[in-house]
Image (tube, rainbow, N blue to C red):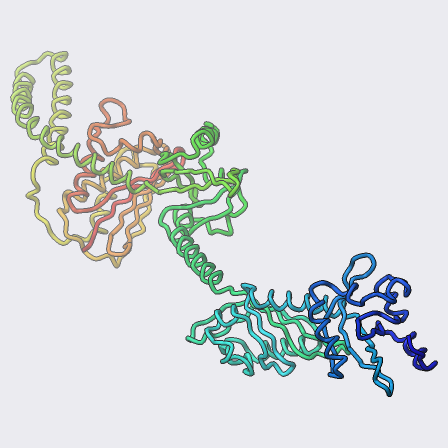
Length: 600
Protein backbone atom coordinates (compact mmCIF):
# COMPACT_ATOMS: atom_id res chain seq x y z
CA UNK A 1 0.00 0.00 0.00
CA UNK A 2 1.10 3.47 -0.70
CA UNK A 3 2.10 5.79 2.10
CA UNK A 4 -0.80 7.33 3.94
CA UNK A 5 -0.66 10.56 5.92
CA UNK A 6 -0.46 9.93 9.60
CA UNK A 7 -3.73 11.78 10.15
CA UNK A 8 -5.52 9.91 7.41
CA UNK A 9 -4.13 6.65 8.66
CA UNK A 10 -5.39 7.41 12.12
CA UNK A 11 -8.86 8.26 10.85
CA UNK A 12 -8.89 5.13 8.71
CA UNK A 13 -8.05 2.96 11.69
CA UNK A 14 -10.50 4.43 14.17
CA UNK A 15 -13.45 4.84 11.81
CA UNK A 16 -16.57 3.08 13.01
CA UNK A 17 -17.33 2.21 9.40
CA UNK A 18 -15.91 -0.95 7.88
CA UNK A 19 -13.19 0.17 5.47
CA UNK A 20 -11.24 -1.63 2.76
CA UNK A 21 -8.64 -0.06 0.45
CA UNK A 22 -8.80 -1.92 -2.85
CA UNK A 23 -6.78 -1.57 -6.07
CA UNK A 24 -8.21 -1.66 -9.55
CA UNK A 25 -7.91 -5.44 -9.59
CA UNK A 26 -10.12 -5.77 -6.53
CA UNK A 27 -7.29 -6.81 -4.23
CA UNK A 28 -7.52 -5.63 -0.65
CA UNK A 29 -4.47 -3.58 0.24
CA UNK A 30 -5.54 -2.50 3.71
CA UNK A 31 -8.39 -2.93 6.22
CA UNK A 32 -9.29 -1.14 9.43
CA UNK A 33 -10.18 -2.51 12.84
CA UNK A 34 -13.93 -2.19 12.26
CA UNK A 35 -13.64 -4.46 9.20
CA UNK A 36 -11.78 -7.08 11.19
CA UNK A 37 -14.28 -6.89 14.02
CA UNK A 38 -17.30 -7.16 11.75
CA UNK A 39 -16.00 -10.09 9.69
CA UNK A 40 -14.00 -11.93 12.35
CA UNK A 41 -10.95 -12.04 10.11
CA UNK A 42 -7.52 -10.79 11.09
CA UNK A 43 -6.14 -8.11 8.80
CA UNK A 44 -3.58 -10.53 7.36
CA UNK A 45 -6.38 -12.95 6.38
CA UNK A 46 -8.07 -10.31 4.22
CA UNK A 47 -5.18 -8.27 2.79
CA UNK A 48 -3.74 -9.20 -0.60
CA UNK A 49 -6.90 -11.18 -1.41
CA UNK A 50 -9.90 -10.24 -3.57
CA UNK A 51 -12.54 -8.36 -1.63
CA UNK A 52 -15.08 -10.28 -3.67
CA UNK A 53 -14.11 -13.34 -1.64
CA UNK A 54 -16.05 -12.08 1.36
CA UNK A 55 -18.99 -10.67 -0.64
CA UNK A 56 -22.16 -12.82 -0.65
CA UNK A 57 -22.73 -14.60 -3.95
CA UNK A 58 -26.09 -12.93 -4.53
CA UNK A 59 -24.50 -9.48 -4.32
CA UNK A 60 -21.28 -10.10 -6.31
CA UNK A 61 -22.71 -8.94 -9.63
CA UNK A 62 -23.95 -5.64 -8.22
CA UNK A 63 -20.63 -5.25 -6.36
CA UNK A 64 -18.59 -5.64 -9.56
CA UNK A 65 -20.72 -3.09 -11.36
CA UNK A 66 -20.39 -0.57 -8.55
CA UNK A 67 -16.64 -1.27 -8.31
CA UNK A 68 -16.11 -0.52 -12.02
CA UNK A 69 -18.15 2.65 -11.82
CA UNK A 70 -16.04 3.83 -8.90
CA UNK A 71 -12.88 3.66 -10.99
CA UNK A 72 -14.70 5.71 -13.61
CA UNK A 73 -15.06 8.31 -10.86
CA UNK A 74 -18.85 7.92 -10.84
CA UNK A 75 -20.53 8.45 -7.45
CA UNK A 76 -21.37 5.08 -5.98
CA UNK A 77 -22.99 4.98 -2.55
CA UNK A 78 -25.66 3.25 -0.47
CA UNK A 79 -25.23 0.00 -2.34
CA UNK A 80 -26.85 -2.81 -0.38
CA UNK A 81 -24.69 -5.89 0.03
CA UNK A 82 -23.70 -8.70 2.40
CA UNK A 83 -20.31 -9.52 3.87
CA UNK A 84 -19.67 -13.14 4.75
CA UNK A 85 -17.89 -13.31 8.09
CA UNK A 86 -15.33 -15.91 9.02
CA UNK A 87 -17.99 -17.98 10.86
CA UNK A 88 -20.21 -17.97 7.76
CA UNK A 89 -22.82 -15.52 9.01
CA UNK A 90 -23.96 -12.68 6.78
CA UNK A 91 -23.53 -9.05 7.73
CA UNK A 92 -25.97 -6.67 6.04
CA UNK A 93 -24.08 -3.58 4.90
CA UNK A 94 -24.52 -0.43 2.87
CA UNK A 95 -21.46 0.24 0.63
CA UNK A 96 -19.90 3.50 -0.46
CA UNK A 97 -17.14 3.49 -3.10
CA UNK A 98 -14.67 6.44 -3.03
CA UNK A 99 -11.95 6.85 -5.66
CA UNK A 100 -8.44 7.71 -4.39
CA UNK A 101 -5.77 8.78 -6.86
CA UNK A 102 -2.46 10.64 -6.80
CA UNK A 103 -1.60 13.42 -9.13
CA UNK A 104 -0.25 11.02 -11.70
CA UNK A 105 -3.52 9.06 -11.62
CA UNK A 106 -1.48 6.00 -12.51
CA UNK A 107 -2.39 3.79 -9.56
CA UNK A 108 -5.90 4.68 -8.55
CA UNK A 109 -7.34 3.06 -5.46
CA UNK A 110 -10.85 2.78 -4.07
CA UNK A 111 -11.89 2.97 -0.47
CA UNK A 112 -14.84 0.63 0.01
CA UNK A 113 -16.56 1.68 3.23
CA UNK A 114 -19.40 -0.40 4.60
CA UNK A 115 -21.90 0.45 7.31
CA UNK A 116 -23.53 -2.41 9.24
CA UNK A 117 -27.27 -2.16 8.61
CA UNK A 118 -28.25 -5.54 10.09
CA UNK A 119 -30.44 -3.95 12.75
CA UNK A 120 -31.99 -1.68 10.16
CA UNK A 121 -32.61 -4.65 7.89
CA UNK A 122 -34.22 -6.62 10.74
CA UNK A 123 -36.36 -3.61 11.56
CA UNK A 124 -37.37 -3.32 7.91
CA UNK A 125 -38.29 -7.00 7.80
CA UNK A 126 -40.33 -6.67 10.96
CA UNK A 127 -41.95 -3.54 9.60
CA UNK A 128 -42.77 -5.34 6.38
CA UNK A 129 -44.25 -8.25 8.28
CA UNK A 130 -46.24 -5.83 10.41
CA UNK A 131 -47.45 -4.00 7.31
CA UNK A 132 -48.49 -7.28 5.70
CA UNK A 133 -50.20 -8.38 8.90
CA UNK A 134 -52.16 -5.13 9.00
CA UNK A 135 -52.96 -5.31 5.31
CA UNK A 136 -54.20 -8.88 5.27
CA UNK A 137 -55.75 -9.16 8.74
CA UNK A 138 -59.48 -9.82 8.88
CA UNK A 139 -59.88 -7.04 11.43
CA UNK A 140 -60.48 -3.57 9.99
CA UNK A 141 -57.52 -1.29 10.79
CA UNK A 142 -57.00 2.44 10.29
CA UNK A 143 -54.00 4.66 10.99
CA UNK A 144 -54.49 8.38 11.53
CA UNK A 145 -52.21 11.31 12.18
CA UNK A 146 -52.31 13.14 15.48
CA UNK A 147 -55.21 15.26 14.23
CA UNK A 148 -57.23 12.16 13.50
CA UNK A 149 -56.99 12.36 9.72
CA UNK A 150 -56.81 8.95 8.06
CA UNK A 151 -53.46 8.09 6.45
CA UNK A 152 -53.98 4.35 5.99
CA UNK A 153 -56.78 1.78 5.93
CA UNK A 154 -56.56 -1.92 5.16
CA UNK A 155 -58.91 -3.80 2.80
CA UNK A 156 -60.97 -5.11 5.75
CA UNK A 157 -61.67 -1.51 6.77
CA UNK A 158 -62.84 -0.71 3.24
CA UNK A 159 -65.11 -3.76 3.32
CA UNK A 160 -66.76 -3.03 6.66
CA UNK A 161 -67.40 0.66 5.93
CA UNK A 162 -68.27 0.44 2.24
CA UNK A 163 -65.79 3.24 1.45
CA UNK A 164 -62.69 2.82 -0.75
CA UNK A 165 -59.21 3.77 0.39
CA UNK A 166 -59.29 6.75 -1.97
CA UNK A 167 -62.50 8.00 -0.35
CA UNK A 168 -61.07 7.63 3.16
CA UNK A 169 -57.43 8.83 2.99
CA UNK A 170 -57.20 12.38 4.29
CA UNK A 171 -60.69 12.25 5.79
CA UNK A 172 -61.55 12.28 9.48
CA UNK A 173 -63.15 9.10 10.92
CA UNK A 174 -66.13 11.31 11.77
CA UNK A 175 -67.26 10.48 8.24
CA UNK A 176 -68.52 7.26 9.88
CA UNK A 177 -70.25 8.97 12.82
CA UNK A 178 -73.70 7.48 13.40
CA UNK A 179 -74.81 10.23 15.75
CA UNK A 180 -75.65 7.63 18.38
CA UNK A 181 -72.98 8.63 20.90
CA UNK A 182 -73.08 11.73 23.13
CA UNK A 183 -70.33 14.37 23.06
CA UNK A 184 -68.96 13.15 26.39
CA UNK A 185 -68.27 9.77 24.76
CA UNK A 186 -65.93 11.33 22.19
CA UNK A 187 -64.41 13.72 24.71
CA UNK A 188 -63.39 10.90 27.01
CA UNK A 189 -61.94 8.92 24.09
CA UNK A 190 -59.78 11.83 22.85
CA UNK A 191 -58.57 12.69 26.34
CA UNK A 192 -57.41 9.09 26.78
CA UNK A 193 -55.50 8.66 23.51
CA UNK A 194 -53.93 12.13 23.53
CA UNK A 195 -52.53 11.26 26.96
CA UNK A 196 -50.73 8.33 25.31
CA UNK A 197 -53.08 5.72 26.73
CA UNK A 198 -55.00 2.93 25.02
CA UNK A 199 -58.77 3.41 24.65
CA UNK A 200 -61.19 0.57 24.04
CA UNK A 201 -64.97 0.45 23.83
CA UNK A 202 -67.99 -0.46 21.76
CA UNK A 203 -68.98 1.97 19.06
CA UNK A 204 -71.78 2.31 16.52
CA UNK A 205 -70.58 3.61 13.15
CA UNK A 206 -72.55 4.25 9.99
CA UNK A 207 -71.87 2.31 6.78
CA UNK A 208 -71.70 4.16 3.48
CA UNK A 209 -75.17 2.76 2.68
CA UNK A 210 -76.57 4.22 5.91
CA UNK A 211 -76.81 1.01 7.93
CA UNK A 212 -75.36 0.78 11.42
CA UNK A 213 -72.07 -1.06 12.05
CA UNK A 214 -71.58 -2.37 15.58
CA UNK A 215 -67.89 -2.56 16.49
CA UNK A 216 -65.45 -2.97 19.33
CA UNK A 217 -62.70 -0.40 18.80
CA UNK A 218 -59.20 -0.35 20.30
CA UNK A 219 -57.15 2.81 19.69
CA UNK A 220 -53.41 2.72 20.44
CA UNK A 221 -51.32 5.90 20.28
CA UNK A 222 -48.25 5.86 18.00
CA UNK A 223 -45.37 7.42 19.93
CA UNK A 224 -42.03 8.60 18.49
CA UNK A 225 -38.67 8.00 20.25
CA UNK A 226 -39.03 11.34 22.00
CA UNK A 227 -42.25 10.15 23.60
CA UNK A 228 -44.47 12.36 21.49
CA UNK A 229 -47.82 11.09 20.15
CA UNK A 230 -47.60 11.31 16.36
CA UNK A 231 -50.64 9.28 15.35
CA UNK A 232 -53.10 6.55 16.23
CA UNK A 233 -53.70 2.94 15.28
CA UNK A 234 -57.34 1.89 15.39
CA UNK A 235 -58.22 -1.81 15.40
CA UNK A 236 -61.89 -2.65 14.83
CA UNK A 237 -63.80 -5.85 15.55
CA UNK A 238 -67.08 -6.24 13.70
CA UNK A 239 -69.87 -7.00 16.20
CA UNK A 240 -72.77 -6.48 13.79
CA UNK A 241 -73.63 -10.16 13.36
CA UNK A 242 -73.05 -10.80 17.05
CA UNK A 243 -75.39 -7.95 17.97
CA UNK A 244 -77.97 -9.20 15.49
CA UNK A 245 -77.80 -12.70 16.96
CA UNK A 246 -77.93 -11.28 20.48
CA UNK A 247 -80.98 -9.23 19.51
CA UNK A 248 -82.69 -12.24 17.93
CA UNK A 249 -81.83 -14.36 20.97
CA UNK A 250 -83.13 -11.67 23.31
CA UNK A 251 -86.36 -11.35 21.32
CA UNK A 252 -86.77 -15.13 21.27
CA UNK A 253 -86.10 -15.35 24.99
CA UNK A 254 -88.49 -12.46 25.64
CA UNK A 255 -91.11 -14.18 23.48
CA UNK A 256 -90.71 -17.48 25.32
CA UNK A 257 -90.62 -15.69 28.67
CA UNK A 258 -93.86 -13.89 27.78
CA UNK A 259 -95.48 -17.21 26.85
CA UNK A 260 -94.33 -18.80 30.09
CA UNK A 261 -95.15 -15.77 32.22
CA UNK A 262 -98.60 -15.14 30.74
CA UNK A 263 -99.65 -18.78 30.44
CA UNK A 264 -102.96 -19.60 32.10
CA UNK A 265 -101.27 -22.71 33.48
CA UNK A 266 -98.97 -22.45 36.47
CA UNK A 267 -95.35 -22.92 35.37
CA UNK A 268 -93.03 -23.38 38.33
CA UNK A 269 -89.26 -23.87 38.35
CA UNK A 270 -87.83 -26.07 41.10
CA UNK A 271 -84.24 -26.72 42.17
CA UNK A 272 -82.90 -30.11 43.25
CA UNK A 273 -84.28 -29.59 46.77
CA UNK A 274 -87.74 -28.74 45.35
CA UNK A 275 -87.42 -25.11 46.38
CA UNK A 276 -89.35 -22.75 44.13
CA UNK A 277 -87.07 -20.74 41.80
CA UNK A 278 -89.57 -19.31 39.30
CA UNK A 279 -93.28 -18.55 39.51
CA UNK A 280 -95.38 -17.21 36.63
CA UNK A 281 -98.65 -15.26 36.55
CA UNK A 282 -100.60 -18.46 35.97
CA UNK A 283 -99.24 -19.78 39.27
CA UNK A 284 -100.23 -16.53 41.00
CA UNK A 285 -103.78 -16.87 39.66
CA UNK A 286 -104.19 -20.56 40.51
CA UNK A 287 -102.57 -20.58 43.94
CA UNK A 288 -103.15 -16.97 45.03
CA UNK A 289 -99.51 -16.40 46.08
CA UNK A 290 -97.40 -13.56 44.69
CA UNK A 291 -93.96 -14.48 43.38
CA UNK A 292 -92.14 -12.86 46.31
CA UNK A 293 -94.21 -14.94 48.75
CA UNK A 294 -93.02 -18.31 47.42
CA UNK A 295 -89.54 -17.90 45.93
CA UNK A 296 -87.06 -19.98 47.89
CA UNK A 297 -89.79 -21.91 49.69
CA UNK A 298 -90.40 -25.62 49.31
CA UNK A 299 -92.99 -26.87 46.82
CA UNK A 300 -94.57 -29.01 49.56
CA UNK A 301 -96.25 -25.85 50.94
CA UNK A 302 -98.74 -26.24 48.08
CA UNK A 303 -99.58 -29.88 48.85
CA UNK A 304 -102.38 -30.89 51.26
CA UNK A 305 -100.87 -32.43 54.42
CA UNK A 306 -102.72 -35.71 53.97
CA UNK A 307 -101.17 -36.14 50.50
CA UNK A 308 -97.72 -35.34 51.91
CA UNK A 309 -98.27 -37.97 54.61
CA UNK A 310 -99.46 -40.50 52.04
CA UNK A 311 -96.11 -40.26 50.22
CA UNK A 312 -97.50 -38.74 47.04
CA UNK A 313 -94.46 -36.48 46.53
CA UNK A 314 -92.07 -39.43 46.77
CA UNK A 315 -94.22 -41.39 44.31
CA UNK A 316 -94.16 -38.55 41.78
CA UNK A 317 -90.44 -37.98 42.30
CA UNK A 318 -89.68 -41.65 41.71
CA UNK A 319 -91.53 -41.69 38.39
CA UNK A 320 -89.98 -38.41 37.22
CA UNK A 321 -86.48 -39.70 37.96
CA UNK A 322 -87.21 -42.99 36.19
CA UNK A 323 -88.85 -41.56 33.06
CA UNK A 324 -87.63 -37.98 33.05
CA UNK A 325 -91.19 -36.69 33.32
CA UNK A 326 -94.71 -37.31 34.56
CA UNK A 327 -97.65 -36.12 32.49
CA UNK A 328 -101.21 -35.06 33.37
CA UNK A 329 -101.07 -36.57 36.85
CA UNK A 330 -104.38 -35.75 38.57
CA UNK A 331 -104.20 -34.74 42.21
CA UNK A 332 -105.09 -31.88 44.54
CA UNK A 333 -103.22 -28.83 45.77
CA UNK A 334 -103.77 -26.04 48.32
CA UNK A 335 -104.34 -22.37 47.53
CA UNK A 336 -103.18 -19.50 49.71
CA UNK A 337 -106.67 -19.44 51.26
CA UNK A 338 -106.38 -23.11 52.18
CA UNK A 339 -108.84 -24.26 49.52
CA UNK A 340 -108.24 -27.63 47.89
CA UNK A 341 -108.26 -27.49 44.11
CA UNK A 342 -108.15 -30.26 41.53
CA UNK A 343 -105.13 -30.07 39.23
CA UNK A 344 -103.31 -31.87 36.45
CA UNK A 345 -99.55 -31.95 37.05
CA UNK A 346 -96.83 -32.34 34.43
CA UNK A 347 -93.28 -32.40 35.77
CA UNK A 348 -90.09 -32.61 33.70
CA UNK A 349 -86.44 -32.81 34.65
CA UNK A 350 -84.30 -29.80 33.69
CA UNK A 351 -80.69 -30.41 32.62
CA UNK A 352 -77.72 -28.13 31.96
CA UNK A 353 -75.67 -28.14 28.75
CA UNK A 354 -73.55 -30.99 30.13
CA UNK A 355 -76.64 -33.13 30.70
CA UNK A 356 -76.60 -32.86 34.48
CA UNK A 357 -79.98 -32.60 36.23
CA UNK A 358 -80.22 -29.15 37.85
CA UNK A 359 -83.90 -29.16 38.80
CA UNK A 360 -87.34 -29.65 37.33
CA UNK A 361 -90.24 -27.71 35.90
CA UNK A 362 -93.83 -28.20 37.04
CA UNK A 363 -96.77 -27.28 34.82
CA UNK A 364 -100.00 -27.18 36.78
CA UNK A 365 -103.46 -26.88 35.25
CA UNK A 366 -106.44 -26.09 37.46
CA UNK A 367 -109.18 -28.57 36.50
CA UNK A 368 -111.50 -27.78 39.41
CA UNK A 369 -114.03 -26.07 37.15
CA UNK A 370 -113.67 -28.77 34.51
CA UNK A 371 -114.47 -31.45 37.07
CA UNK A 372 -117.42 -29.44 38.31
CA UNK A 373 -118.77 -29.18 34.76
CA UNK A 374 -118.29 -32.91 34.27
CA UNK A 375 -120.25 -33.53 37.45
CA UNK A 376 -122.99 -31.23 36.18
CA UNK A 377 -123.16 -33.11 32.90
CA UNK A 378 -123.32 -36.37 34.82
CA UNK A 379 -126.11 -34.93 36.99
CA UNK A 380 -127.97 -33.73 33.91
CA UNK A 381 -127.78 -37.18 32.36
CA UNK A 382 -129.04 -38.74 35.58
CA UNK A 383 -131.84 -36.18 35.78
CA UNK A 384 -132.95 -37.13 32.30
CA UNK A 385 -132.93 -40.85 33.09
CA UNK A 386 -134.68 -40.41 36.43
CA UNK A 387 -137.24 -38.10 34.83
CA UNK A 388 -138.19 -40.82 32.39
CA UNK A 389 -138.24 -43.34 35.22
CA UNK A 390 -140.44 -41.05 37.33
CA UNK A 391 -143.06 -40.81 34.60
CA UNK A 392 -143.27 -44.59 34.50
CA UNK A 393 -143.38 -44.88 38.29
CA UNK A 394 -146.20 -42.34 38.51
CA UNK A 395 -148.30 -44.52 36.24
CA UNK A 396 -147.25 -48.02 37.31
CA UNK A 397 -147.05 -47.37 41.07
CA UNK A 398 -149.31 -44.38 41.61
CA UNK A 399 -152.54 -45.96 40.44
CA UNK A 400 -152.19 -49.24 42.42
CA UNK A 401 -151.09 -47.23 45.44
CA UNK A 402 -154.27 -45.17 45.26
CA UNK A 403 -156.32 -48.36 45.25
CA UNK A 404 -154.39 -49.76 48.24
CA UNK A 405 -154.84 -46.49 50.13
CA UNK A 406 -158.60 -46.53 49.49
CA UNK A 407 -158.86 -50.14 50.64
CA UNK A 408 -156.95 -49.36 53.87
CA UNK A 409 -159.35 -46.51 54.60
CA UNK A 410 -162.38 -48.79 54.04
CA UNK A 411 -160.96 -51.46 56.39
CA UNK A 412 -160.17 -48.77 59.00
CA UNK A 413 -163.80 -47.66 58.99
CA UNK A 414 -165.23 -51.19 59.24
CA UNK A 415 -162.99 -52.85 61.84
CA UNK A 416 -163.09 -52.27 65.57
CA UNK A 417 -159.98 -54.34 66.35
CA UNK A 418 -157.35 -52.12 68.01
CA UNK A 419 -154.46 -54.26 66.87
CA UNK A 420 -155.72 -54.12 63.28
CA UNK A 421 -156.28 -50.35 63.53
CA UNK A 422 -152.69 -49.89 64.75
CA UNK A 423 -151.26 -51.92 61.90
CA UNK A 424 -153.52 -50.24 59.34
CA UNK A 425 -152.31 -46.82 60.56
CA UNK A 426 -148.74 -48.00 60.08
CA UNK A 427 -149.59 -49.14 56.55
CA UNK A 428 -151.30 -45.80 55.87
CA UNK A 429 -148.20 -43.85 56.97
CA UNK A 430 -145.96 -45.90 54.71
CA UNK A 431 -148.43 -45.41 51.83
CA UNK A 432 -148.26 -41.64 52.44
CA UNK A 433 -144.48 -41.81 52.45
CA UNK A 434 -144.50 -43.63 49.10
CA UNK A 435 -147.05 -41.15 47.74
CA UNK A 436 -144.87 -38.21 48.82
CA UNK A 437 -141.86 -39.68 47.04
CA UNK A 438 -143.94 -40.27 43.90
CA UNK A 439 -145.24 -36.69 43.99
CA UNK A 440 -141.66 -35.37 44.18
CA UNK A 441 -140.68 -37.53 41.24
CA UNK A 442 -143.75 -36.49 39.25
CA UNK A 443 -143.21 -32.81 40.03
CA UNK A 444 -139.65 -33.09 38.76
CA UNK A 445 -140.40 -35.13 35.63
CA UNK A 446 -143.49 -33.21 34.52
CA UNK A 447 -142.85 -30.17 32.28
CA UNK A 448 -143.40 -27.05 34.33
CA UNK A 449 -146.79 -25.50 33.81
CA UNK A 450 -146.57 -23.31 36.90
CA UNK A 451 -147.01 -19.59 36.56
CA UNK A 452 -143.73 -17.77 35.87
CA UNK A 453 -143.68 -14.22 37.22
CA UNK A 454 -141.41 -11.51 38.59
CA UNK A 455 -140.63 -12.47 42.15
CA UNK A 456 -139.03 -10.73 45.11
CA UNK A 457 -136.40 -13.32 46.04
CA UNK A 458 -135.89 -11.77 49.49
CA UNK A 459 -139.59 -12.24 50.23
CA UNK A 460 -139.37 -15.91 49.14
CA UNK A 461 -136.32 -16.40 51.39
CA UNK A 462 -138.15 -14.88 54.38
CA UNK A 463 -141.18 -17.10 53.74
CA UNK A 464 -138.97 -20.21 53.56
CA UNK A 465 -137.20 -19.27 56.81
CA UNK A 466 -140.51 -18.66 58.57
CA UNK A 467 -141.76 -22.09 57.48
CA UNK A 468 -138.64 -23.90 58.71
CA UNK A 469 -137.84 -21.95 61.88
CA UNK A 470 -141.00 -23.11 63.66
CA UNK A 471 -140.28 -26.79 63.10
CA UNK A 472 -139.55 -29.06 66.03
CA UNK A 473 -135.85 -29.44 65.12
CA UNK A 474 -135.34 -25.68 64.70
CA UNK A 475 -136.15 -24.48 68.21
CA UNK A 476 -132.48 -24.15 69.28
CA UNK A 477 -131.27 -22.65 66.01
CA UNK A 478 -130.60 -18.95 65.44
CA UNK A 479 -131.60 -17.87 61.94
CA UNK A 480 -129.72 -14.78 60.69
CA UNK A 481 -130.87 -12.97 57.55
CA UNK A 482 -128.47 -10.71 55.62
CA UNK A 483 -130.51 -9.72 52.59
CA UNK A 484 -129.54 -7.15 49.99
CA UNK A 485 -132.64 -4.97 49.69
CA UNK A 486 -131.48 -3.61 46.31
CA UNK A 487 -131.85 -6.98 44.59
CA UNK A 488 -133.86 -6.82 41.36
CA UNK A 489 -136.95 -8.96 40.99
CA UNK A 490 -136.39 -12.28 39.30
CA UNK A 491 -138.63 -14.23 36.92
CA UNK A 492 -139.24 -17.67 38.46
CA UNK A 493 -141.93 -20.12 39.46
CA UNK A 494 -142.35 -19.00 43.06
CA UNK A 495 -143.58 -22.38 44.37
CA UNK A 496 -140.51 -24.09 42.91
CA UNK A 497 -137.89 -21.64 44.15
CA UNK A 498 -139.30 -21.65 47.69
CA UNK A 499 -139.06 -25.44 47.59
CA UNK A 500 -135.33 -25.08 46.85
CA UNK A 501 -134.79 -22.76 49.82
CA UNK A 502 -136.86 -24.95 52.16
CA UNK A 503 -134.84 -28.02 51.16
CA UNK A 504 -131.55 -26.20 51.80
CA UNK A 505 -132.78 -24.86 55.15
CA UNK A 506 -134.06 -28.28 56.28
CA UNK A 507 -130.69 -29.84 55.40
CA UNK A 508 -128.94 -27.10 57.38
CA UNK A 509 -131.21 -27.80 60.36
CA UNK A 510 -130.47 -31.54 60.13
CA UNK A 511 -126.72 -30.76 60.01
CA UNK A 512 -126.88 -29.25 63.52
CA UNK A 513 -128.02 -32.67 64.81
CA UNK A 514 -130.41 -31.16 67.35
CA UNK A 515 -127.77 -28.99 69.00
CA UNK A 516 -127.89 -25.20 69.31
CA UNK A 517 -126.67 -23.81 66.03
CA UNK A 518 -126.69 -20.92 63.62
CA UNK A 519 -127.99 -20.71 60.08
CA UNK A 520 -127.05 -17.59 58.14
CA UNK A 521 -129.00 -16.78 54.97
CA UNK A 522 -127.78 -13.97 52.73
CA UNK A 523 -128.52 -12.56 49.31
CA UNK A 524 -126.39 -10.32 47.11
CA UNK A 525 -125.43 -9.54 43.53
CA UNK A 526 -122.21 -10.74 41.89
CA UNK A 527 -122.02 -9.12 38.51
CA UNK A 528 -125.24 -10.01 36.75
CA UNK A 529 -125.83 -13.08 38.95
CA UNK A 530 -127.99 -13.17 42.06
CA UNK A 531 -126.47 -15.21 44.89
CA UNK A 532 -128.47 -16.83 47.70
CA UNK A 533 -126.18 -18.30 50.35
CA UNK A 534 -127.27 -20.71 53.11
CA UNK A 535 -124.52 -21.26 55.68
CA UNK A 536 -124.65 -23.47 58.77
CA UNK A 537 -122.19 -24.33 61.52
CA UNK A 538 -123.16 -27.99 61.63
CA UNK A 539 -121.18 -31.18 61.20
CA UNK A 540 -120.04 -30.50 57.63
CA UNK A 541 -119.78 -32.86 54.68
CA UNK A 542 -116.84 -35.13 53.92
CA UNK A 543 -115.19 -34.71 50.51
CA UNK A 544 -116.12 -38.20 49.34
CA UNK A 545 -119.79 -37.51 50.16
CA UNK A 546 -119.82 -34.00 48.70
CA UNK A 547 -119.42 -35.48 45.22
CA UNK A 548 -122.71 -37.42 45.57
CA UNK A 549 -125.15 -35.17 47.42
CA UNK A 550 -126.94 -33.99 44.27
CA UNK A 551 -127.54 -37.53 43.04
CA UNK A 552 -131.09 -38.94 43.28
CA UNK A 553 -131.90 -41.17 46.26
CA UNK A 554 -128.55 -40.42 47.92
CA UNK A 555 -128.96 -39.63 51.61
CA UNK A 556 -126.92 -39.83 54.79
CA UNK A 557 -130.03 -39.80 56.97
CA UNK A 558 -131.50 -42.79 58.74
CA UNK A 559 -134.02 -44.96 56.93
CA UNK A 560 -137.39 -43.27 56.96
CA UNK A 561 -136.00 -39.79 57.63
CA UNK A 562 -135.23 -38.81 54.06
CA UNK A 563 -135.78 -39.88 50.48
CA UNK A 564 -132.54 -38.56 49.04
CA UNK A 565 -134.52 -36.46 46.56
CA UNK A 566 -134.51 -33.02 48.20
CA UNK A 567 -131.16 -31.77 46.90
CA UNK A 568 -131.60 -33.62 43.64
CA UNK A 569 -134.93 -31.89 42.99
CA UNK A 570 -133.48 -28.55 44.11
CA UNK A 571 -130.59 -29.01 41.71
CA UNK A 572 -132.98 -29.70 38.84
CA UNK A 573 -135.14 -26.63 39.62
CA UNK A 574 -132.11 -24.32 39.73
CA UNK A 575 -130.78 -25.77 36.46
CA UNK A 576 -134.17 -25.15 34.84
CA UNK A 577 -133.60 -21.44 35.53
CA UNK A 578 -130.07 -21.66 34.00
CA UNK A 579 -128.61 -21.31 37.47
CA UNK A 580 -125.97 -23.11 39.48
CA UNK A 581 -125.95 -24.66 42.93
CA UNK A 582 -122.69 -25.41 44.67
CA UNK A 583 -121.48 -26.45 48.10
CA UNK A 584 -118.43 -25.65 50.19
CA UNK A 585 -117.93 -27.66 53.35
CA UNK A 586 -115.41 -28.67 55.97
CA UNK A 587 -116.02 -31.51 58.38
CA UNK A 588 -116.68 -30.21 61.88
CA UNK A 589 -117.09 -26.58 60.78
CA UNK A 590 -120.22 -26.53 58.66
CA UNK A 591 -121.44 -26.17 55.11
CA UNK A 592 -122.28 -23.35 52.72
CA UNK A 593 -124.72 -23.84 49.83
CA UNK A 594 -124.58 -21.18 47.12
CA UNK A 595 -127.42 -20.75 44.63
CA UNK A 596 -126.51 -18.59 41.63
CA UNK A 597 -129.33 -17.29 39.41
CA UNK A 598 -128.59 -15.25 36.27
CA UNK A 599 -130.63 -12.04 35.99
CA UNK A 600 -129.89 -11.64 32.29
